[in-house]
Length: 471
Ligand SMILES: Cc1ncc(COP(=O)(O)O)c(C=O)c1O
Image (cartoon, rainbow, N blue to C red; front, side):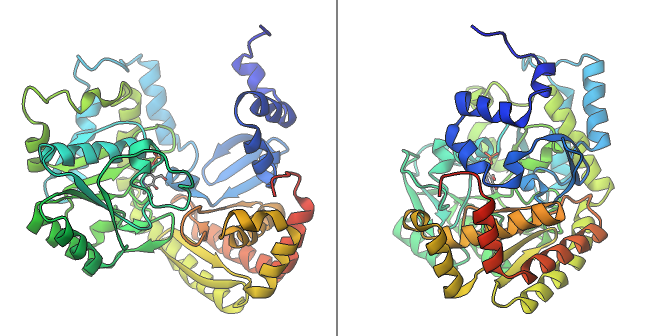
């Protein structure tokens, strides 16, 4: 056995040593893939607010929003203080047999902030666990007598076996086993929901939908959302809104569905920024009568809580309490709308100025997608430069073009973005909600300057710079 690495020694590892350890102990192909990008070849020293500070002193503007986790930015001072207080007072983290004041307060706060009688909460760790908890609740609500569940064709609900089988994303490239009875409707198409309801009359226990799909940057109309609410009420189907990504102000309202007064699902799921960028915590919140019918008796009182050891831990709940207080006090939905006032016209201007590169832009609040498309000549160029890649993945060319733009934004402008692996693979513009309108303007100018170079040049440059060998 070689000597164990201490935390201090881990912090002193250089990037080459970290790559080597990943190759030996984590995933060799991940190193090949991620070193294609500038950020895979560097290490972050520390992160604060909207910025990453790299080991070499570079300061990078983080417009990924941590893929939904970082509405508060990195290491928000109030979140850090809440966690420090918890540790310094040696609060109790683990036991469930003593009641937790933190868990109690967090449940209370969610009930105050969510509409209607959405008031009964459970707090596991990840989004996938929250989704699966919601599905179990719906199944139990119907006492196991219904066996069909509906999800949309573009859904993303997680990657565990259960949530993965409810996910329609192109990321699902291997057929793992999943939960039975899944039927698929077309996102936003009420007629396709009605057709499934008729075909599976009386057998559907739940309908799962993302009101705003962050992985494709598409969203449901008010008419569709109110329509599924009506159908689910009529058929006694448990309606689950998955707002794991879009909660806590991201799209300009506290949750996306809350822009429509009176619209209340039976269960809503949340995670990501719920933990303030520090705590791995999620929740499903159910309407009281739905929760009561499923679990409110002595026999079942621990059925849900035994789903995972790590539910409702003290510091995780304390962090979430502080995170949602910050969201409310600093009016994060309004901050997202302030960012939208720069991003919407800015990105629309870019789409107009670069019609050969940008097919469309779409979004709401601080969550936007730039859909890149270089036309047939550029696609031929990608095919010539990376002949192996095309056959494996029909979206490869779009991904490659988008990756080239992300790489140029990073290298030339010190701005970090990402693209989604679902839908048409848009470049995602998702600043943290502590970012300023001036930073959003900086992003718009940088994207404009990048696209002015022309996609062909950006693609060629990315191929030349790339050090990985997967493609
Ligand atoms: C809408 C939605 N649902 C579920 C999940 C799964 O969450 P997790 O990755 O924490 O399991 C995600 C994650 O991106 C998501 O965006």
